[in-house]
Image 1: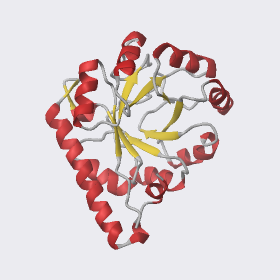
Image 2 (image 1 turned 120 degrees about the vertical axis):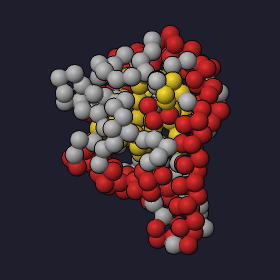
Image 3 (image 1 turned 180 degrees about the vertical axis):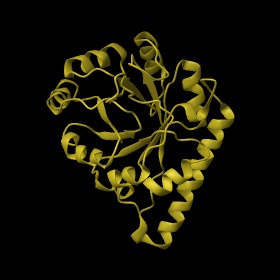
Length: 243
């Protein structure tokens, strides 16, 4: 019987190589490196992003978070920083998404979808031809000063779960995740991966105790779900059958 794949974890808002090493030590599969944003935490300059990305050991992925909206602007930001993956934090024109797939075909592309309501599910088909994965978050891009992530808020996980069920691509879940609620998030949503910033920090700095508690909760939830699915294969999440 095929076993459920473990839930991947991306630690975002990495500010230094020391934070990158700490996140990797506790089990991070990916590092989030935040470029210039209209709001939100964790922004560092492109030189720092490039240095952290260059030092990250394989197979750890490095995600550049960019607020650029044009294919050329996103591609230039990637060229300046050298990540393995680009996370597009706002919903860009699909024409730009298609052009970007041609400009940087060898860089993984993750489209963020902010869950402001069930209509977010309609965007799956819009972007699926051009990206490698989705990340669903709790931002509000429609505000006068757009929120494009790092809100610390939980959104409607029922919508998130439906998004995961309908997507043929891997889906990362972000928004208000903590050591205390992550097990329920995994049980309810069954995402491919998790993404968090403030939930493992104290006063903006990564906290080893919170990291340990978070990763233990993820491992325990994965083990619990795998045991259930071993007993009842019909309950296996469809996403984890694919990855």
